[in-house]
Image 1 (cartoon, rainbow, N blue to C red):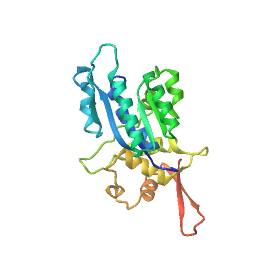
Image 2 (cartoon, rainbow, N blue to C red):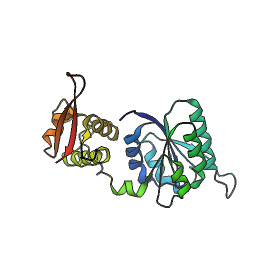
Image 3 (tube, one colour):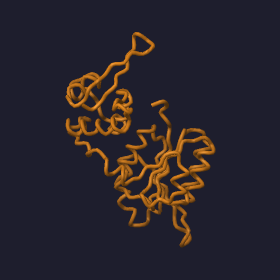
Length: 239
């Protein structure tokens, strides 16, 4: 990555299902690091109960917003106010707004006017104006269809089973490769670690990622010289 962006992730719980939580943060990790993780809704409503079960696992801060008036979306207002506060704090490079609601169109435009990267995520029903206001927009249904298998962990060792590791690597390579299918191994490793924070090559008996990947027999690795004769970059491609 040219730059590891610091991204504020703001989720509209009224408009997004908890089933998308993993693909949301996997995709954010492709663009940078989530420094703010906030989700907005009226948590007294029973329909948001499923979100409560995943908040701790992903370290998402729930923001309570009561619906004071029928027909008025207080959640949208709270998210927008928070986004502007974060913008003026100067602590992030970009925002990820997760909603299928066109009410965030002006917010996305305003954040981009301020020079911030804006990644939007929502379902296919998302209105075109909001999609167009974002620098990038990802359809949640599409991300979910392409999601890698849920990592199978052996206790808390951080060891993903080999087939899941292979499947995960293939998806990351496909998402970040050039026209010839080559992806920078350093970037692949960084994304893999973000998706599985407790991943460690030493759990597989290897000190580094390159020999671990080579042992899987599913990938080819290429070394490329740099301007510094003492430094080479490794690239990876699916066989």
